[in-house]
Amino acid sequence: MSFSFRPIAPSDRQLIEELVRAYYAFDGLTYDPSLHGPALDQLVKGDPAVKIWIVEADGTPAGYLILTIGFSMYYGGKDGFIDELFLKEQFRGSGGGAEIMHFADVQAKELGLAYLHLEVTETNTRARGIYERRGFAPTGHMLMSKRTAPD
Image (tube, rainbow, N blue to C red):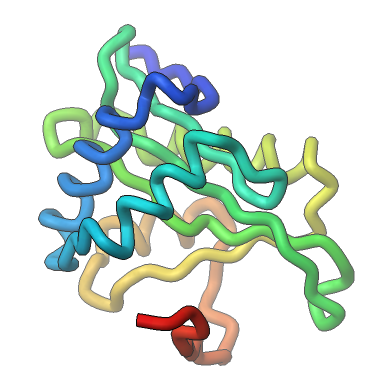
């Protein structure tokens, strides 16, 4: 199976929503149209701090990758965060996860990112194994979040 990556286009709005909903269902997350819908609208319009690609397997939409760009003094400058990475179930186990991670590494280097970060649930041992084989390791830091926009 051959995987390819293409930047999201405005015409992909429905497709990306379907993929995000599939990912959230897989990971036990709640998709909230009032929260996630506007975020998807922003993604398809383009944002210089966010890169998103549709992953295709032999021309069929198979998943997606969202990479956000930030800055960290601690990590030495521009860094990236793999916000979401998803591959539909029927495409797992065929090397797609490793190909997506390789693609993310290449993009990080092309963007001049000093570090690349991601988060993974502790119970997702399959994904953790892929990430660890690609050089990711726990940092000893804990991710904490706070909503700043009004509800």
